Length: 117
Length: 111
Image (cartoon, rainbow over all chains, first blue to last red; front, side, top):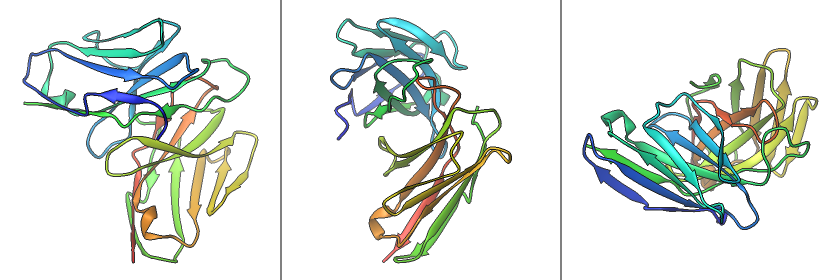
């Protein structure tokens, strides 16, 4: 158990719908990163939030958006769902951000499995 | 896009044998990390090796890094059935930055 929680565990949506996934970071962590993991592949970076601001984004369209709240929990929103959005969505929390001189481990939550029909 | 390749894609061994997984990457890095994932759930951090290190040990794990070849290997010695999982390498260009993962190796340890 890493102390990072995600909800819901599983979700089924239909094409064109919108979805919100939630992540509670580990105590003391101010950075949350989101990853998408398609079946049989490694996770791919979506974006990172540090102190409520987006701090880096991967190669994902604007319909993937996020928020980070003052308690450092975070949401991932996906609009206009497509079949290819079916994946395991992982969040990871850590202290600090890019450029830190010390390594801060990213702790992953158990993921939300999204199925788009 | 993935950072690079992992080799093999799948590995099946008997309990007690050693398992070796390889990872290649494309860009300069600050560090390389290995993660384990059970049954498509969350990732567990195993070990980190910095770009100025060549070898690192942690329990039954041994990681090597060759920056000239942009490759790394993970050796699990005396494997156990509980080691059955997917293993991913991930690189960072600097601390705190995004992790760039490989496609992973599926390890099955038969008892």
